[in-house]
Amino acid sequence: MKKLLTFIILLNIALFTIQCNICIAGLGTCKKSDNSLALLLLALNQLQSSHSSSELYSPKGELDPNFGNNGVTITSFGTTEYRANSTVIQTDGKILVAGSYKSEHANHDIFIARYNSNGSIDNSFGTDGFVKTEISLASDFVSKIILQTDGKILVLGSYFNGTDKTDIYIVRYNPDGSLDNTFGTNGIIKKNIGASYDEPKGMVLQSDGKILVAGSYDNGSNYDIFIARYNSDGSYDNSFGTNGISTLAIVINNHNWMEDVVLQSDGKILMTGYIKLGSDDKIFIARFNSDGSYDNSFGTNPSFNYITTNVGSSLEQASKITLQPDGKILIAGIYHNGSNYDIFIARYNSNGSLDNSFATNGFKKFNIGDDTDEVHSLALQFDGKILVAGVYNNGSNEATYITRYHSEGTLDTSFGNNGIVTKSFSSYVEKLEMVIQSDKKIILTGYTKNGSDYDIFLLRYK
Image (cartoon, rainbow, N blue to C red; front, side, top):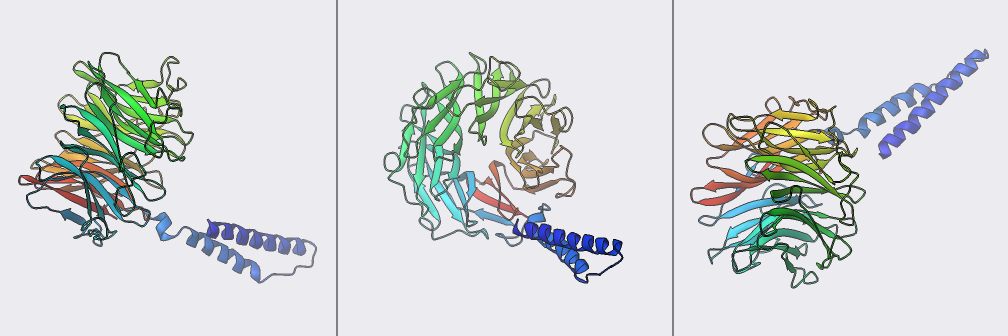
């Protein structure tokens, strides 16, 4: 920005000097300045340097040889299962990966692993780069990891509460991996929303430090949607919804599955997922006001705070949601093409109407493989290009993919091989999460089966 401002100043000086020369020449007393051309060239050079290679850089979709082993890091634990579920990047470039592992009690506990920016394990974190926490005496699972502005780490998930039911937990760690005892009870809060099974999927942090958690819960006969807000100390924020919780049934007496949540700049909350309607699935987007009330200005029906959309003839599931800087809404997911599942990206205006300027009538539909494709992650590059990541079957085993589209919905063929990069594994892969580093490089994490065990993998593309 400073370089761009300098360019503008220099350019104006150069133009002013040239104008003065013209005026003087018009009076018959031309007095040429030798500095005007030099100033103009200096301004142009300043503009070029203001858009440095880092600022203009857009990944080509090649594995980065400076990361791990030629762009790949695989952390193996022998006979122990480690399943990576969520990833976040610290401001210093270190990478936090959270998930669950099979403990010595044969149940699953949670872990956080920290990697250096080159893909090696950061042994200064926890014990040999790992922090492990037992939430319950039964199995614990991870849904999301995020960072606070002070560097503290929040992990969201679910655990079996001893009655074969699942409740929600949030655990907070200090930057060094130790439990933050100022949060909840010894760094952990446990809550139940519904009658039996709670399934948290998303967590976002407000600018005031309050924590929003969203997911689905069992209301006794089917699943509805919930969003809860917690104060920064882990207590319920009773100013939100009803006693800190707001719930929604898109379609009553049907399963409503929340998959992802995002926070608008005005504090309103957007979520997406799908509704189970017998043998059919239909995608939805819902919006709440910052106090947890329904935002009835969203969508075309003034009685509701949500929209539903048909992508294909049946069986559509939205997986991820993100926001463009202009407030437009992007979602990605899968739809049934008649024989298997393909991928879609849809764009909506900020009021919930489809943006017909995107791709074809607001939708981009495509496939990666000949079998079922999955969508696991959605991200926006700094230049507005759209990244979608997931899993597909390449005919012999499962593989990861990342595909990139221009902001108007056309395939960016300059990325990878005709717009797509893939990485094959010897067995199936799961729970991909894609994050973009400050230098624009792309990190993709997940886990893969290794015989009877599971290993963590990280890929970096440049």
